[in-house]
Amino acid sequence: IIRVRNGEYICSGDNQYEEETVLQRQLIGVVDSFVRKGKCYDRNHPGYRLYQAVWVGLFPLRRIYIGVRRPLGR
Image 1: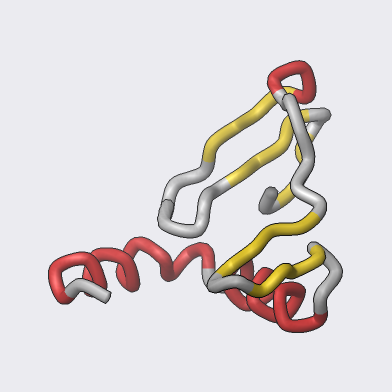
Image 2 (image 1 turned 180 degrees about the vertical axis):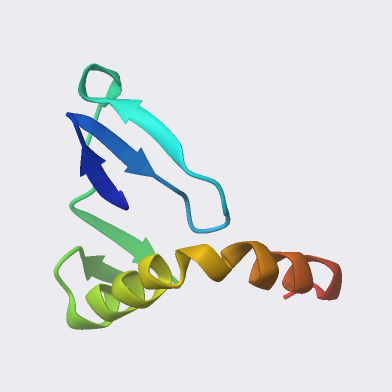
């Protein structure tokens, strides 16, 4: 979630560079934690919070970053 506007959630996945509007009635769950490379992360983990702040902050530049990264692969 990038921001909440007039009761709508403005979202963008990690690999997207466009916004998506989601209404509250469309939500079916909330992520509380996740596992990546065998390690469990809480949504309040400091490392994840930093990643989240940087990635959301760089949202306007994602189109350029993803456009360059995709042809090169990971």
